[in-house]
Length: 264
Length: 128
Image 1 (cartoon, chains in turn purple, blue):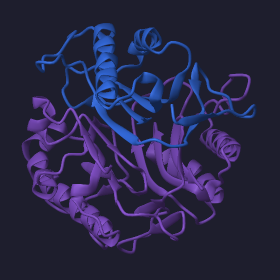
Image 2 (cartoon, rainbow over the protein chains, first blue to last red; image 1 turned 180 degrees about the horizontal axis):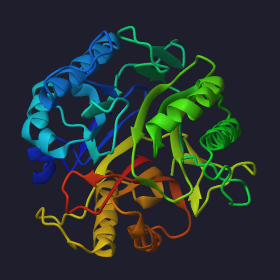
Image 3 (tube, helix red, strand yellow; image 1 turned 120 degrees about the vertical axis):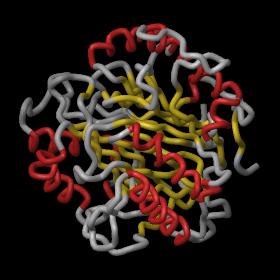
Image 4 (cartoon, rainbow over the protein chains, first blue to last red; image 1 turned 90 degrees about the vertical axis):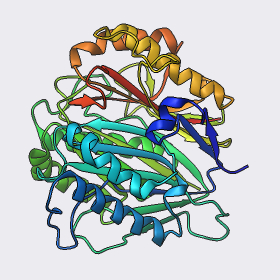
């Protein structure tokens, strides 16, 4: 009753090292933050896509190891790159060195910018840890290395029920957009909406497991959105990914945030 | 359908989708980002986002069925497109497939997908 690979023999995914679908009994599941090719001192690994991919996966390996897992347990991967040609030329092979025969369900996206303009790749994973939650706290949030960011590198969900929020935008209940052109107001409204949905599901900000923040400008988000986010989580951060993209569903939207949470 | 739908009057969706879903049992299914490949790996509808969207949702359904489920078991989908002007056609194709309400949903315009000819990619999480 553990992991089931769906359509494992389909040749397309087989050749590229991923699986069309993967299902598990969600007894213990690890969500990682999106990790990049940063060194311990915060600098970006020199030499471009290959060293950055290597470093990102080395860091993910450490996050997984801390949870007693390996890449074989990965059930989902999301790869964000800013340079597809470089990824195809050298990044893909570097990734394969770590993943080996592991075949998670997979999505790959070319985005406009990652947290630092020098970053070329970011990878996040969902990992099946197996075993039984037996007596462990619902959420274990941890870091595998010290870093200054407002996020945890890994969050383990022990049992409970996973909660998936739609991507939240700055909309009012009447359908109008709050804070047109105003980053701070949109950030406030988005987190207000996230708070409402979490509460309606019996959860709180501390219940958040994984957050993906899609913004039209990382610089503007850092300046105006991050303070709102910090106040919302009050130190109890989920695993997070921040990505800059060229557009959202309506031209007025500056930010959209997806949250996965867990409740007992 | 081993999940429940979360709704709240204070925060409403901007379109016909669920604001949140909570898994209540079953198995957690992660589905890879689906694109408009046919069974032979050929792109269906080069330059035609509507045709690509139909094939993409067909592929999504195919994976769900292979896992013993169907589109109604989806808790969350994320739709990635490369041009916002494609959204109306994608939304139409999507509502042909999802009768009634969509799962919890996110729409993102990315710079490109992993093949420059792909105009849409959709990933999903289901409880089956």
